[in-house]
Amino acid sequence: MSSGVVVIHLRCWPAEKSEQTNTESAPLTEQEISVSTRVKICCIRSFEEAEMAIRYGASALGFVSAMPSGPGPISEDLIAEIIPRVPPGILTFLLTSKQDAPSIIDQQRRTRANTLQLVDAVSFETYRELKKVLPGVSIVQVIHVTGSDAIDAAQSIAPFVDALLLDSGNPNLPIKQLGGTGRVHDWTISKTICAQLAKPVYLAGGLSPENVAEAIRLVRPFGVDLCSGIRTNGALDEEKLSRFFDQVATV
Image (cartoon, rainbow, N blue to C red):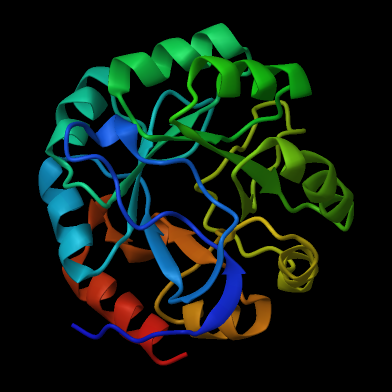
């Protein structure tokens, strides 16, 4: 397994989490340091998949709760079983399509994830309520890059969240696509967002061992996030996972 370093200056995640519980990680900070490109492996379905992803170098794991469409959802009961077994130092993202603060708070309390990934739009008041009630939990907002209006959306939302994640869904369809499409969006838009914002930005959408190095070189994200690009018949594929990390290491 390779572990290359992409040295960039950005706002970064904290390095440590509480040893008592996976939910007590410190929130994202705005301390400027040099770090390697983070890798978040999403759609984790079992502890065995979590263990494999961590072994190859994942710094974050994504757990998908109920969604209107797309791959990877598992029950909140299963998420709640896996997360306590994840070692300190690994971020646990709960992907939620809920849009009201009480429902999101209930999900976090049931699963004990230390990071909330909001895959649909929420109000500014919802951000404020989440920060008030869950002060130790980081908030990551997904921006679906369907056009250049994503730049303005990212700028307006950034002050309210700890990080952004740029994906290729389409929440405007009759059945919302909120992730897991396997599509690549316009990376030049993502590049602009990364260059303009001080907050950490993850790049997602159609990433694979074949294109991740190119994506990192162009966009210069804080981290990359993927699901289907390293899976075969829905299962995490160790050979693809290994090649993905090897490609990240070449940048």
